[in-house]
Picture (tube, rainbow, N blue to C red):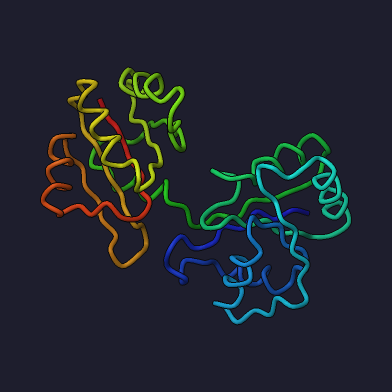
Length: 222
C-alpha cells in the first residue's frame, strides 16, 4: 500500500495523529529531498536511522520508478512532499498514475495544503473554482492570463514571491476590473488575507501593508 501523507506548510502542529503513527510504523519513505524529510521526522522526535529514503523528482528515470513500484507491491510505503499534500503540485502525481496503471493500491490522507485555506478565506463566492497551479514563467504566460480573464468562475493559482507584483501589473495592463484574493504565509506567524481590486492590491504593496514575502495563493474573480 502507498500512503500519500500531507505535511505541515508552516506550523508543525498541523499534522494528524494518523500521519504521526504512520511515520513511526512505516520503513520506506518516498520524498523529494531526504534532508527535508529527516528534518521533519526530527521535529516529532521520530528516529529516521532505520528508515529507507527513496528520492522522487520530476526527473526520476523509469528504471528507478519501476524499482519503487516493486517495493510498494511488497511493503507499505509513504510519500511526502516538501510541504503540504503530495500529488497536488509535485512529482507525487507520477506515482498516482503509475499505481493506477499497475493496479497498486494507495490511499491519500487529508491534511495541510495552501490551496483550500486560501479558497475559504476569499471574500467572493467559491462554490465553484478552477485551480491552475503556477502560471508559466515565460512561454504561454500571457495566453494563460487571457484564459483566466475569460473564466466565468474564480481561478486560483500559486505565485512565487519573485513574480507576485509583476502578476498584478499584468492583470492591470490586461484591463482586469474584478476582485483579487491574496493569501500569504498560510499557517505561519505573518499570515495575511486580502480581497481587493488589482489597483488596491498594488497600493497595499507600495505602502508596505502587503509584504512581498513567502508563497502566495491568488484568486481571480471577474
